Amino acid sequence: MRPRGLHKAVVIGVSAGGLEVLTMLLPLIPAGFPLPVIVVQHLHPLQDRSFLEILGRSCALVVREAEEKEKALPGVVYFAPPNYHLLLELDATFSLSVDEKVNYSRPSMDVLFETAAEAFGPGLIGIILTGAGRDGAIGLRRIKENGGTTIVQDPATAQFPIMPMAAMEETEVDHVMNIEEIARFLSGL
Image (cartoon, rainbow, N blue to C red; front, top):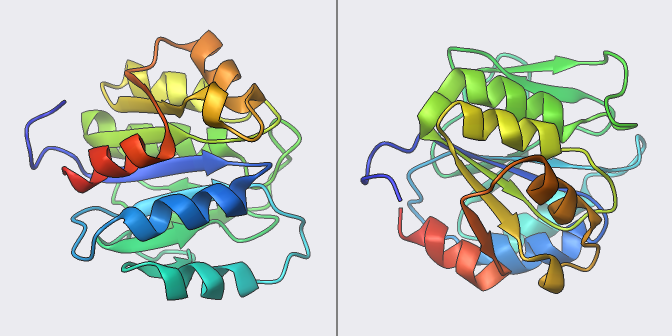
């Protein structure tokens, strides 16, 4: 693990089974968490935003949708809006895009992970959770190539293990953990 203070942001990719796993993970992250947490969850393009309120009521961090040109701030959990790619600029601000789908998805984890890897380099922590596709695998590899920390939910504990397994096939991840272990790792920052 890197010395305290070198981490800059956390990116999380989650798909099928996502709401359930996020309602387990996010409430375990303590108030005053020193990093922004940026999430791409595959959602239907017309998905309502009620899940943000549900998560916001159960966790100590502010939970909101990322907005164009907004700066990623510590202690906030940002979600990609449905049907928009979420990108991070080099100045740690968000950009939204309606470019073509990547891995059949918009938002795409790969798009967020790759741009965040450029923006934060070795200060980035990338996490792949439950899901049924391959989105996020290449982006997690890019995080690793840029010196960041890579974490995958233990496929044995994932409701849909395909996405964590795809990430592990694509790159040698730093940690394979269950949700409680991921929460302890993040809380230790």
